[in-house]
Image (cartoon, rainbow, N blue to C red; front, side, top):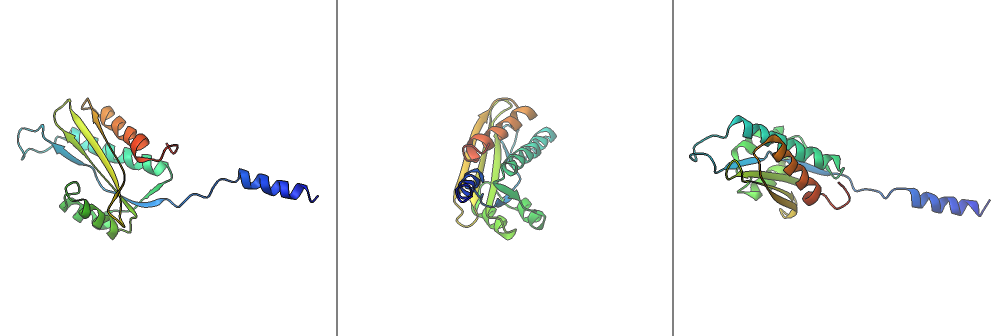
Length: 167
């Protein structure tokens, strides 16, 4: 009997998965569209582009949450401030807003639309404590479609934002 017990303990220790750190409390801020393809700076983006931004928001959040590394926080308490701030041009603003809802990290991103054919997407994850980037990625895509935008967002999540092996 004594020989079996230590062996069982060793097997149990090997087969027990390593304890994972708790998911990071995350402020997923809405993506921003920088559309230089419009006729003038005062022009508003079309409904298709606004819809695609919402799709990208969903793909990024769902992909990061599905990894088990991130947990989304409710941003309703800071919704008005989100709308008033330049989340792309002022990384400190994004970090400050995320801090208000108790986030450990903040996810920001933007789509730069140069034309209907040339589009760039950037996503950055920053530590709220330090303000420093902990993950980032950007990609150029061709095609101004829902599929092109969501595939680009999925690719960035899988290949630039998540640690290797957690896809």
